[in-house]
Structure formats: C-alpha cells, structure tokens
Amino acid sequence: MLNHEESLDLLFRALGDRTRRALVQRLVRGPASVSELAEPLTMSLAAVVQHLQVLETAGIVRSEKVGRVRTCRIEPAVLRAGEQWLGRQRTTWESRLDRLGDFLADPPGTSEGSTS
Image 1 (cartoon, helix red, strand yellow):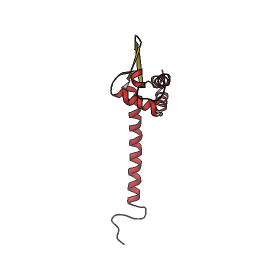
Image 2 (cartoon, rainbow, N blue to C red; image 1 turned 30 degrees about the vertical axis):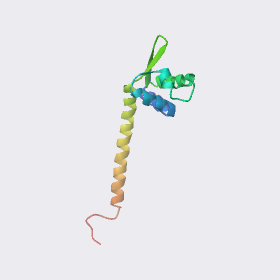
Image 3 (cartoon, helix red, strand yellow; image 1 turned 90 degrees about the vertical axis):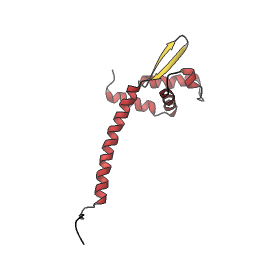
Image 4 (cartoon, rainbow, N blue to C red; image 1 turned 90 degrees about the horizontal axis):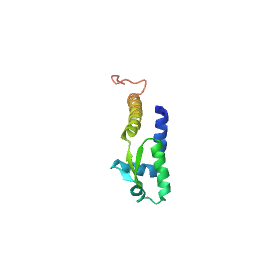
C-alpha cells in the first residue's frame, strides 16, 4: 500500500494533465464507458485508455468490465484527500498573509496611539 505522500504525488501528477482533468470532470457527473469518455476528445481510443490507466494508478478512477464494455467511475475518497491537503496549505498561507497584512498596516517604529 502506498503511503500518504506517495498517494498525493500520484494524485497531483495525474491531475497535472488537461486531458485527465477533463476525464475527471466528466466522471464527476457519473459513471461512463471508455468510448463515451473518448467521444469528445481528439485522440485515439488507445490514448484515452492510457490516460485512464494513469488515473486508475493514482486511485482517482476505478473501472470494471462487463462483457465488452469498460465503465469508469470516480473514487471520491482520493479526491477528498487531495482537497484536504490543499485546504491545510491554504490555511497556512492565509495565516501568513494575514500576519504580513498586519505588519504592513502598522510598520515598525509607529504605533496606532502615537501622535506626531
């Protein structure tokens, strides 16, 4: 089993490609067959399958084959893990920016109550 950091690496690497992000956006609306996913794209079915394999390796997408049709669906837990990581980063940076804003609003050597 992959550790948390490796899972995040795979997640963000997979989402770093515009085609894979488009596939994820489509799958958020609901499961779809590989041919349905490939239809709006200007690439071969084999290329779409390769993109889907990257998403499956990252755990973002799960697929199952019934007869001749492979259906893909989103794995929300993996996307939530990425969202939680981003949320923690956002909180850290917002705190830092708030402190910077306070510092810039009241430069050293001045105080709010002083008169000149």
